[in-house]
Length: 395
Image (cartoon, rainbow, N blue to C red; front, top):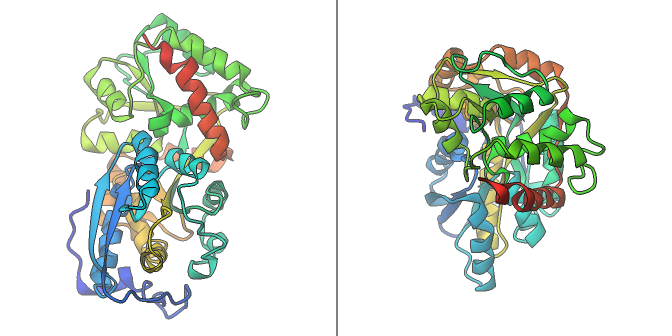
């Protein structure tokens, strides 16, 4: 997404931490074994993460040509990646070196034992994550069960986005949202949670909004949530397989209200998919259900490449490279590590957020509780139940 030119001084500042010393000379990680010859890395993104990290990853390749000769970037639908990776592992022919993923494919990979253990196995080769991460990002790290490393973080949602020229009475509670949807059938939409950040954030946020018995247990603790979603489903025409179609539907006027998050609110308005005039709201009783992207290494990747990938991870966790995560608001704010400000980001990021960001977010982030998403096994169970009981009944 970014096309930028950088002065030599800027480039050296941006990449100064990757050779084992941060700018200023402070050691940041243990020395890793340099490969016998430069390697080619195949990085697959199933979460849209490259919008936040690709420039920083390319900075690494430029700074270390004796470690990496080429990086191949590709994107894949989240639901398809685990099966593809499992087939490669069964055939002993893994050609994916790193996966950039959200909690969906992270969880599926943990369940199917697709990922290499990174912590504690390689803890000495990485920064002290608890020391460098923002507090919620450190809590998100625990969800990886040692099989991934957080690279970007945001408080997420659930938020609701709407066209103010078409929605004159904005719901304040979950009950009012349901009443609005019933009074305006087929005008509210959210995407299938297993393949949508806003979709799964909406799913996981409802137990808090409805006061369910146990928001961390989708099987035994979500009676109110499943009943609510089934009733809401009577007003919904279809559940898209990704978030983008919901944004296009709002922008084109085929729906009036959708589930969203901070990043999915800002970035589509930057891109012109959704009008700048679109507004957002949170419901009474709102709690953030935060989100993160992870770096995972599949089982079957060679030890030589693992060393390079760990070195790359160190690079991506330096403040200078984290500043790229502000992007154009896609995962707002975006950085997972402490001390990274918008003033450190490229001018394009600063300009986009100045024009399309919302000052109200800072107050909401500071004032509302931040909860973790479901643990891997619980998230998989929630997706399965939603698919069986809600998604299969889409009209």
